[in-house]
Image 1 (cartoon, rainbow, N blue to C red):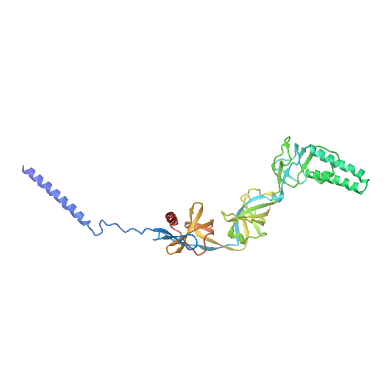
Image 2 (image 1 turned 135 degrees about the vertical axis):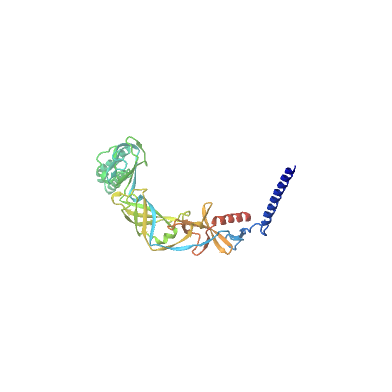
Length: 379
């Protein structure tokens, strides 16, 4: 019995000690700040402020945490304008060779990618139209001695018949030299190349029927070619017709092809704010081919460009926007047109911003979300 009492007293002492220790620990945590939340940063509440003119401004009751501003900079452009272009045929040096009669292809003399010279036979056609026109021409010639002896009026009429018959033959595609060589009427006629160049397309198949207007060949000359290139609207004043330019290609990286600016497009693409140049380039050895890409370099006078950090731009919908500081707590949302820039992390501004303006850089996406929120509440 005594042993049981001793064990009971020992257990009570242990539980009492543990209870006192727990009370002591609780007392140590009873500091003045215990149970009180730490202060939170103020939330930026957005609202729209109307202006006498223009769209409303975004007003923030408090700055967005981590928001910084950047300045739109104007930087110098060198006296060289560089862009990319694409080779194309000079449309003054191409020819569509078409059939001008109803008939049949008797013989094909050239194939696709062949080089042809002006006057070289390319295709022989069979058509009664040729025979009829040649017969009328020969008959008109034979009538000249008979009608010519009947006076000046008859002679003039005879010559008019010959001129009309000759004109009909020319409309059928027969050249003056071929007309002069006509001795008898024949239903076949050999067409010749109107220019020297390469057969780019061949639609002529032996034995196939043809009708007036059917394209048989497409021939183009590569002695001189065009290069079409895009430049930005802001560079338009730096480029003039007649300026010298250079082109390089990946196919011939060590060769420089020289030419001049031949035309400047009168229209500007509203989505990219670019316009096209058309340059005429000398093409020795016919190395430049249509659809080939080139790097263009035009020596011109220096200019200036606006640049802005890419982080300041927000793509929303189908356009880029920037938030321009209009007061201590107010910002204007601007549509910005941009282009690529050589300096990493920056974009070239084509429209929408001015040099010296301050724009939101860091947290621009959050500011745009606040603008959306305020715009939704105000609508």
